[in-house]
Length: 385
Image (tube, rainbow, N blue to C red; front, side, top):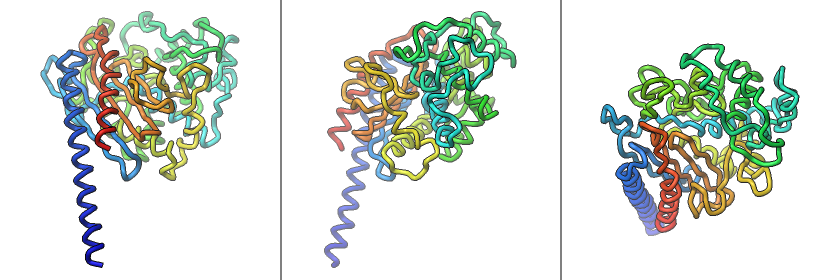
């Protein structure tokens, strides 16, 4: 009996050492990848996370490098807040829809004509499924902000929504997918109208507070938090370098809260929520709030199109996730230089948060860096797990 107990104890020590050694190797590699990104001016600064496994067996490595603000020579830390940009679509607006679906308050086939007043005839049949899968017929983007003075006013939101609704459709809904900020702005508005709460309050109540992440993921940065935010663009429209304010002009006009952008988060916050998504997807927790819709939501919606409901999947041969993420993986990109990818088959999560638009959005080197980073991470993970 003594020998069996001793062997078990010895094996536990070996397992703990093995896990620590794996994390040490991944930490070192991830650190080197981020430092290379800084050296090659892919971004001024970044934080990254790699996690493998699920639930209590998940192991994670985190790293950060470079500057969060070129002007002050302030360095990225574990607690640095990044403007998550369009990750807001997947991690907030989409999950809030899933939560409301679980309560029976919304269905994917509900149409704008059913849910909102004064919808133009050509848009009345657009469904929430169309909006979530970027198949609504709406344009990808229009620089409507140029019609506004750079002043945040309560009436901006209604004016912006009217401009979107009055814009002619670019194609027949459900005939293809065209990634659309405009569609998610409308979707966010639908959720706010249904609940009577803005997305910021709703997100905290339903998503982050139950997970203990309300201080890691949120809309609207306080004055005390601004110095912890990675700076983004030197914005010619607003006439200043943006720090602690949302980068997206349309979201900024809407006072920092919208369906397509607005979230700020730390690397731990994004990892915590992505981990919850993977665990729920794999059926490893009992919380059925927004997880109920995951099996249906995380499937491609149209033939030969990559979009699920609120999430993207790898495109063959040209994905930002590189070559090694499975076809069942889901992820999303953010314009400011952020991304996450979740692979249920390999039980792998890779997150990159950066301020690649600081001081200019013209820096597009991240397009080549993202797949290279993901390939390197997956190849390393396979050797150490």
